[in-house]
Length: 374
Image (tube, rainbow, N blue to C red; front, side, top):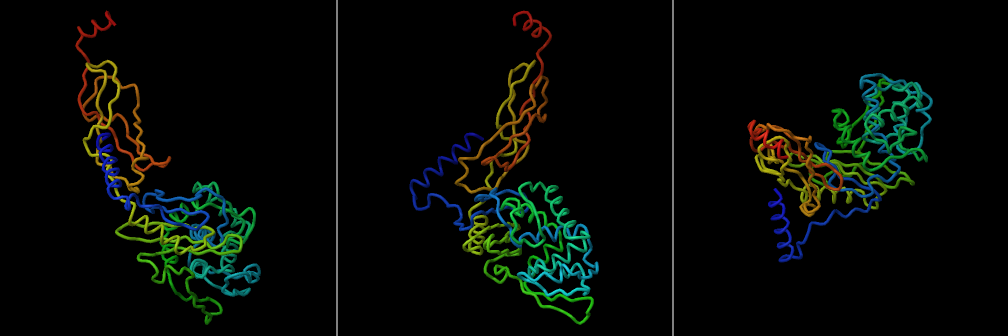
């Protein structure tokens, strides 16, 4: 395997020497203060810029609002609008009025498609019993998901010094949220109409604020915009191509749509699978005690291909994890450890290591000889 990697590095060097204009595929140009590109299936980060920097999420908050609402309520629940929701007049609203009745599902539609701030207040009152109760549920869910750099103070993303998150946490939250069929449906809805239960004749047409959904990029299938004066222009977008789905997060961006497009281009066109281990390939050897030989070779159990920017191949690190000490006898094919591949601290894949040969104990006469003349 080491020989193969050295050959690949040599080929890359020769290619870039002959064709300097194609020396490397550069990382995407991103104007956002913080950004992340994540693979939905694996959770692998392909690109990151200030991913752990604390930032305001604006209306991206509503992704967590929707998660908590769906996991603790039912879309068919009928919600009676209270005075708190009816008095919410800042930003985008659907003009909820006290005493009106509307289903939780329609409120979620308003929150995720039109980013309606009054709808999230109504959701909180119904699901959490109060706004404060719902916020506690949001923060508990964040902790359960391991989003330790995230804290919520409201349901809609209004500015507050204690309301913050990171690009990395938002990518992880979105990956989780897209596992909910209802959220996945709503975040890619371009236009829709919501209907009230009472008054029964009231309805409101909604149009998604995410411009990427309207043909700006092939494969776009979500997710949510967010804007406040403090948070700036923010966007979480998702796109699918060739069986892969990526999530792009851009926070406080000068051009959030172009930032996400650039990240998607990088993820779909530059990042590619690279085979780092072949089944049966000898990767290393390990010390053995009490055997006819003092070391045994270890081979990969199966093929392993990982996705990465080819420019990052020289930075790929390989670590062998073996439960030592290994004592004879060793059977061929015996599982003895794993080989782990990492890039900048992020694990990209691992393959089991099997004994490539059988290693027996020496005969009794050899054991006596070794003990006497050790």
